[in-house]
Length: 163
Image 1: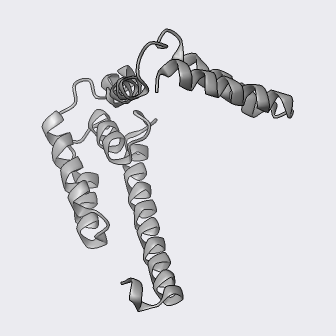
Image 2 (image 1 turned 90 degrees about the vertical axis):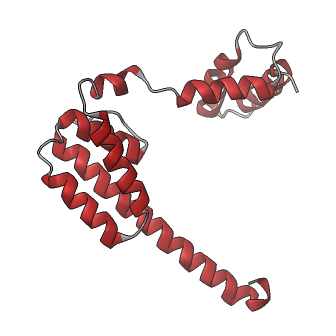
């Protein structure tokens, strides 16, 4: 499929949304259509690969946040946090080290939080960035616990033959 065909299909959806009075949805689709400008001749696969590559590149604000930061220290903490996964004991060890480490300044804290949370690039204070790391861990732990419950409920409902 070409980008042109995809764009045309999305334009049809936009027209339908306008017809049924879904103004905010129509507006969203119109904004989405802007990314297709000038790419009609490309295949959707190559176009989407380009988009993905562009999204994966760090934004300038993220690089500003880490200007002068100790990249080795940042990488070490991100690696240790990632290795902890949802193991609360292991996470707490790394988190306490991060909180106590005086060599971690605001720039490093911003980068660590950005890479661990996969979210914003800067926080108002160093403590806010570190708090974001804790909140992200707690969210991941909660989501993992929910999935265990879903898996258990699925087994209870369908029986052990699915296992």
